[in-house]
Length: 71
Image (cartoon, rainbow, N blue to C red; front, side, top):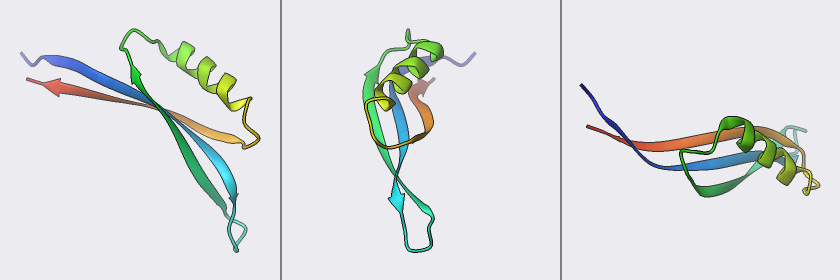
């Protein structure tokens, strides 16, 4: 049977930074590292929205990236 060992997680929020010459949005990402596996999704979304409310840029997505070791 395979085992999964959680190493770390990162919360990444993507914001609209501006628009290019073709009026297409350009994006910027902000990353927050060292999340523990005990953080639940609802709390992460709440924190991401609270942090986005402090920015003048519009947030377009939230991602959680996990790194694990499989044995």
